[in-house]
Image (tube, rainbow, N blue to C red; front, side, top):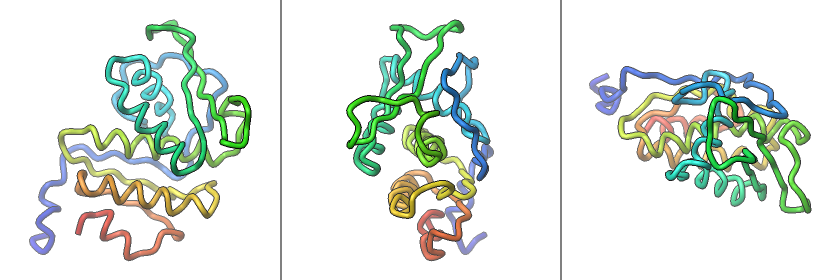
Length: 183
């Protein structure tokens, strides 16, 4: 460990996103006060919905911007309300640049729903004040090969602020792992 002094900064909290992530729902209900996406990513839509209707919508805006720039896809959270309460429900809506209208995330391919938790997790790390070890299994799962590079670039960007992001993937070249780890 003395060879890699940055490893001494590993926080007590470790977050893990497993390779098989939660399937999307047509409509989501309020899930209480959660602070991260969960180990299967099921709370990513909740964090986005909260961010969108709060005065600090930076997580929502940052996630939306990434999808637009990297995947030519617009993402929106339709709450139908100005506030968020235990009775609230919301939908994750997706529109590719070639489409005229939004579709529910359930009606799109698996790629968007499987990468959404990764993007929300990485973007939320940019707003964390303390470094967190994030372990992500199979970030490329169900993604088109052209999107693999965009996900890898996002992880590298996050690794500049957050000392360690680890992923296991046979599609992301091994030399990038050291960059993810900040080593």
